[in-house]
Image 1: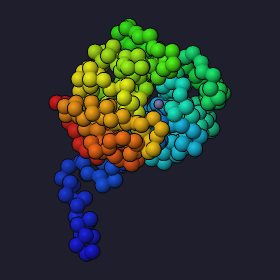
Image 2: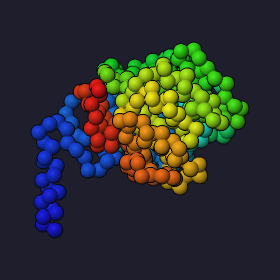
Image 3: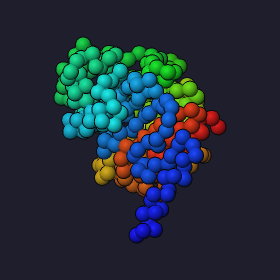
Amino acid sequence: MKRLIALVLVLPLLGCGSLYRFVTDRSKPPELAGPALDIVVKNVGQGQCLLLRAPGGRTAIIDGGLNRAIGTNVFLFLRDSLGTRRLDYAFASHYHVDHMGGLYTVLDSVMAPSRDSLVHGCFDRGHASPDTFYASYLQTVGDKRRTIELGQVFDLGDGATLQCVCVNSKVISGDSTVPPPNYAENSHSIGLLVRYRGFRMMIGSDIGGGAKYSDVESILAPCIGEVNVLYVNHHGSAHSSNEHWLRTLRPQASIISCGADNPWGHPAVACVDRLAAAKGNRIYQTEKGVGDVSRQTIVNGNVWVRVYGNEFTVAGDRYPVGR
Ligand SMILES: [Zn+2]
């Protein structure tokens, strides 16, 4: 036991030569001095929520998980772990409950002291949805609702930006696809490209890459080029992350957001096969999900990306921005 305690005390000291210290809890970022861009793939079970905090303190949220309880949890994380109760930008990627069911609760809490705490408003794809969560969303955002424009750039300060690269099945080059009627909502997702110095991360929400969904990925891929980190589309469904998408984007790390025992079989083995075959790509996942998990790092928590200098970390693993 004594030896174990000694080892625990000594291990953190080994990395003290640099600013960077390896973390033992993979859901926490490494401690470091100096400015950093934080991108957190929040563990919301089966659903989607990402939070960004730029070096100067500006923040953004993309979706808010499935329900009010999860939304409350996301707000507490924003306040307690990111140290702010203000959001500069909010995005509702598309009108499905696993993305929007918790979002209006987050926004409600953010705007409780003042509606100005949601500084630039909440951006969505326009149009409407017959679902009840959508009605609650409309009621909450009110005059803070904004319709996103293809190509629109959102300034997070210190050189960090988000850009809308696809929405409503249309991509930034002007190309578009016609989605099959039953699966249109996913294909209409807002896709956002994060840029900070040389670092790039693609967040495509639930866009697909063929089969029963329309192939937004293949027309979007040449507009994006290489990225450092890929947020895996549609929770790792079999109909997303096609070979063209992965070959063009060439991620060093890709992150799947899915829930334990989800009824959709996410992540699909076929998708994980393609991600694992992509050269130089490591796969991270929020929760165990369903299917083969032999090739992913299961964080069992938030997957935290921290970008600083010309390096970045994903769940505590360190990568160079340039390659
Ligand atoms: Zn979804």
